[in-house]
Length: 134
Image 1 (cartoon, rainbow, N blue to C red):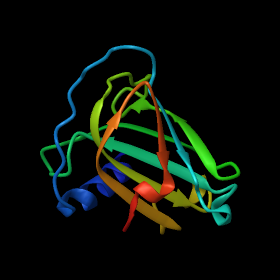
Image 2 (tube, one colour):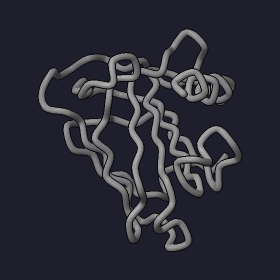
Image 3 (cartoon, helix red, strand yellow):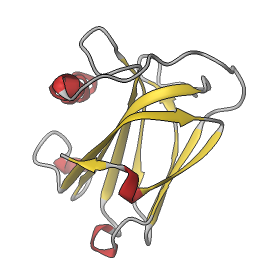
């Protein structure tokens, strides 16, 4: 499954460039909340990746997944390689995907958006409209 998500990240590599992430903190696990998600996606499955940039040389470093509630989802970010808590604040390229359910991951997504460059702290809130739909 990790290979599939890596493939998704590689698809995004031609979308531009973003500043490289810098490890500024080794504090608590990062939490990212996306709010303002349209009601049509309530109960669907959300997936987020955090890349250090948008070229092939800038790898995916973190990810998370979960079910979308009524208008929002909060992700506890995990290290891409170890699946342990990820705690490095910095600037990241984000991809947010919505699927019908977990079984649909790897197939066609219902929605996909990116943010080319976003500062991520220990607790970050992002409005759905900040993502550029792909």
